[in-house]
Length: 253
Image 1 (spheres, rainbow, N blue to C red):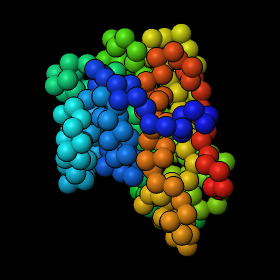
Image 2 (cartoon, rainbow, N blue to C red):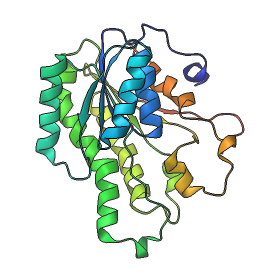
Image 3 (cartoon, helix red, strand yellow):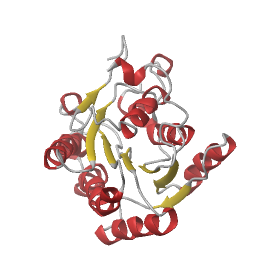
Image 4 (tube, one colour):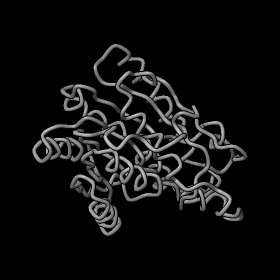
């Protein structure tokens, strides 16, 4: 999949489109939001940390991108009605929705399952799995109205996080991969494109919690993968429809 990593997307790759980025204040989410705006999208920034969302908002404006929208939402405490309300507000404010990019993730550190508090396990499964589905379900009516609607799930490699101590996060990543696969199969002939991106290692706070001893300078920044997310959102030909795109940079494990 070198074509997804080689070169920045065209400046107009997402021109005229409205793209919702969940977890827009995180490492990959913020990078993707900036990259989508640079490609011409009106980006809806969704997350629960308002000061960090504001910094992403300001960065997009300074770079001259389309004015973004900001929607604070705590995925941990949100219920289905909150997601429905978010979709309705996006429709009212932006008039449309063309893409949904799932970058939100919750990981507090490596812990044996036996020692994981029930509420911590439930939070990890909800933020990393249930929440993305509820958000997708709420947005599908809007996405169906788009000429080229797209949903891109970003998930960790289930083989890597399906080992000891990854806890609720690891369980949820297996579920998220399954959710993306099932939804892609159900939407194989539908107007909305479904695909998933499985990026390689990237320099983010989430990774630092699991690999605290590694040299962060040896790990690529999330911007290296953000361009791939833009390419998938802009894939009008549907070449990646229904696929899990696995990206690894040379020498990265």
